[in-house]
Figure 1 (cartoon, rainbow, N blue to C red):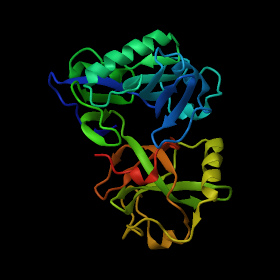
Figure 2 (figure 1 turned 90 degrees about the horizontal axis):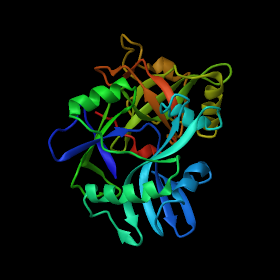
Figure 3 (figure 1 turned 90 degrees about the vertical axis):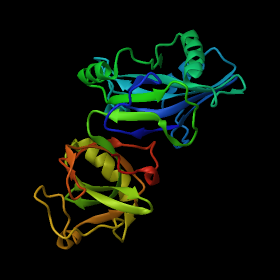
Figure 4 (figure 1 turned 180 degrees about the horizontal axis):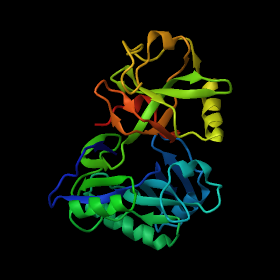
Length: 310
């Protein structure tokens, strides 16, 4: 089940609020002694996060499907999505914040109200008694108080959920509403501007129906190691044609986001299969990103699912 994006949190007694964790969405699946972890696009990531798999194996259930977020915590206890790609780095802790239970001991819970699913989840997770398996509990206070507190902690955002809502598997539902404090989202990589060693900037965009729309260039946010890592991912995806429907731009804007026909000749195109998390200051009037910065590659997000978040 996926959330819709909004600028503000919905209010009312029917809503509850949780932290929006900055990590990998995943489901922990236990079936007897067998345990596996599945990403949002159903990729098996069990070997990638063995500590989380071990924690899921300890829940008090013969079988269970737990929905949540795999998060990397730094030495100060703060989530870091970029750190999730470097889990071997000293001082990092990988945990699984569980926020839903969709199957328990042979029973499908998707039609049960969220509050009932949470109660059952609390019981099986607390029984596991494992520091790598944590509950993402509803937050106390008014929406205004919650926004202030979560933003002050430097966390990504808040997700509002209807207390009596069912679990709409495989769908984006307005029963879950996410509000991000920083402007960032996933974008599809469709090309790059090469330099002497790898690339100077990435060209990224989003799907509008079946059309891939260019949102601009991403120049900052790269360390030399990260730049080399991304270039390695892109080298095998060379394409002859530009995948973006809105290039070239008619002109370069004041902020330099436009891509002219002359500049197109120096660019390299790739098959639009890789997804990147990108932060930015704002959308310009012509639909480009201003001051975009690379955060990380998103192996858990299918490129075709990437849309512009409003």
